[in-house]
Image 1 (cartoon, protein in one colour):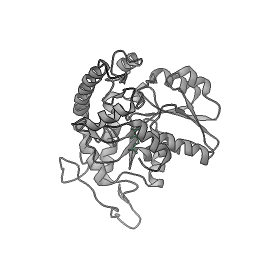
Image 2 (cartoon, protein in one colour):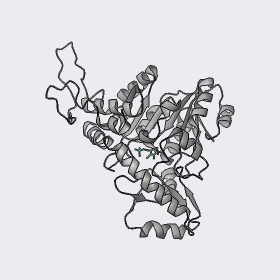
Image 3 (cartoon, protein in one colour):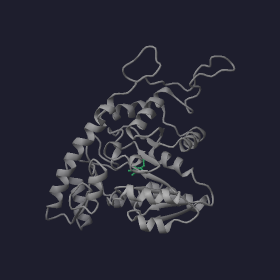
Image 4 (cartoon, protein in one colour):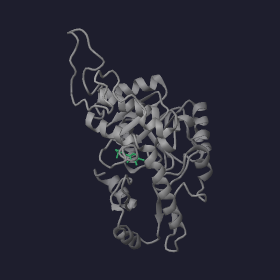
Length: 346
Ligand SMILES: *Cc1c(COP(=O)(O)O)cnc(C)c1O
């Protein structure tokens, strides 16, 4: 089945006798028991809800995973992954990470006795030599945002498996349509579903996908015990967004490539960071392991004032953080990063 077909062909309401063609929103906290001693498939929505179950099955299919878990945000999903390590263990993190992830994991390092160290994950040899006997997990993004540095997941996962260390990849920037880290050897995939998976800028959500039954059990335990599972209505919104994932990303990527080329030839632009350009240092890896460089572009003008005026004078791009969705957005990430690392805001 082609990917775009996979996005729309799934059982929308397994076991529902009314056979609805769109998944119903099971907006309920509890489910009646068959008897005082017997439970059905569902009992309490934190533990499981039919709308979320359809979403999670579909997320798993889209990432070529055996199981997926939906959370209230990307950060809640990343927090759940961080629960896989214990005091005394070590996490190696990529040295160019989403600001919120850096904030969370750095704090984890100072509070919980988990050591957290940054490493250049684009270099498998550097990662190999950074691993110690305490290292349990390597956490990275590829391409990174905003610098779009690219890691060869095939090469890196070989190193990880040899050393018995889990590889977790935040795949938010490319989405499961463009890149499937589990097929490239990663153990855990994370998404901020707020971005491309939703695609309409109307929900915050997160997701984890895995292929290993034991990892899935541990994550199911965290999701149920900590209570950050996605609610039924948000699950439904996300499920609706997923149906057009392939179509949206295909068109957004075509548009982004044209804009990136235009900017890279423009005399007032110093540098364009877009992994989809042929001259990008990671372009060979992108060509070999993905369906393209995605639809997020960053660029440098060499002047803060010029960048500010540009961001404030474009007409079709909304001045907002996060990624574009069905509408485009523009922002100055150096400022949002400064806020992210010091305040409690985004
Ligand atoms: C937005 C984002 C996150 C955080 O996700 P939220 O849904 O905002 O909690 C994590 N990683 C990356 C790469 C992101 O872009």
